Image (cartoon, rainbow, N blue to C red; front, side, top):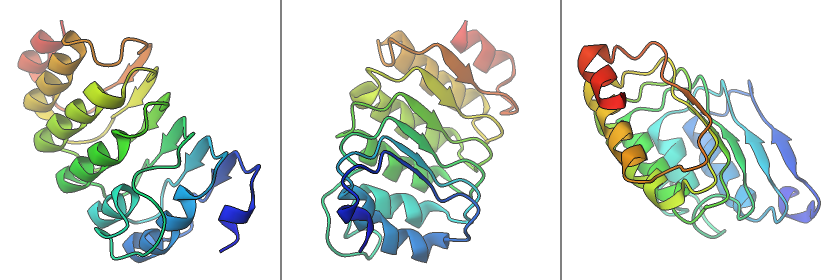
Amino acid sequence: GALPLLANLAFLDLSRNLLGDAGMAILAPGLRLCPALKELSLGINVFGDMACASLASPDAGGSAGGGEGLPPLLENLSLARNSIGDLGAEWLSLALRPSPRIVSLDLRWNRIGPQGAWALAEGLTCAGAHLSTLHLSCNRLLAAGASALAGALQAGACPQLSHLSLRQNTIGCEGAWALA
């Protein structure tokens, strides 16, 4: 494909392209081979959990070729306004682990619940050293998800975090207490 041949490609915005899970399975191996890619925007592409599986591992999403995980220099990743649920968050957690350079992660307007928040918290414990921005607004985290993230932050995950958005997640008093 063309993407791996673009040695200087640092920014790629494929938002609003109706890629779906199948398109992501095709695209993911090429993304892994982009040596300079630092910013990737894949918002509003009607994909779900299997797209995250494709990003995490070439075999998981049914794609072929490429290495595992995200592009090696990736700093900013936007997967906003898709249909990523708990399983997708688990796959994404695996994809993040070999990507310690992530500075910004945007998962707004997905379907991530408490189980997915636990998985992301684990992934951020391994790969959140440089993360400064985390958008999880408008998901389904609830109190348990907020507690999972709070636990990871208390344990030292994401020491550079300066922007955290958990708006519209129904975290309630219990979630607020965990964050406080």
